[in-house]
Length: 74
Image (cartoon, rainbow, N blue to C red):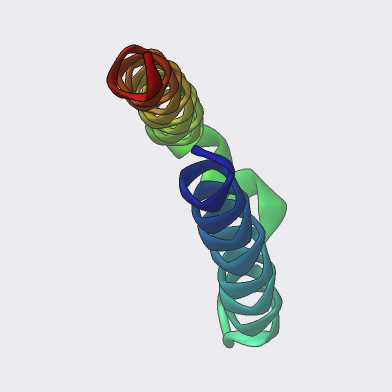
């Protein structure tokens, strides 16, 4: 179970790093301004909700695997 949680956490951190690098590139792009990105707030909100759902699912799967391991050990 701990491997699943550790893998999920590593994936989450990796995605945060990739997202930060992508944001830095987007800020240096010619013609990109904060005002032009205001129209896309719903995309960022949906992205955050999707990540919360994925992390919740990962936590749920890890708990179920842990329960299954305990039942098999009995």
